[in-house]
Amino acid sequence: MRFQWQKGNQVPKIETVIPHTCPDIDKVIKSINSAQAAIGKGLKSDDRSYFEDAESNLDGLEDILEKLRTANDSLREYAQRFLNLKENIECILSDA
Image (cartoon, rainbow, N blue to C red; front, side, top):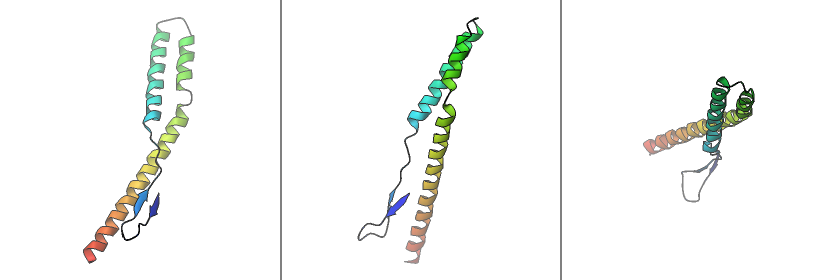
């Protein structure tokens, strides 16, 4: 997160780059649902390819979840910095 001071204003403009995580969350949900469906079909069939489909659907989810963890951490840091800034401003205003 970066702070940019605007001319004539004591309150910084806050800029942050926190990725939009909904598409990744949707991918994880879709993959899990597809894997569950494939496993369900596999349990009712002698065809082992359903289990391979389930494995394929789950492949790569770890990477997506790590990206989500990083985005969540960035959001948490942003919120904490914003809270700290708010408290600093309140302290300055209370002293004025």
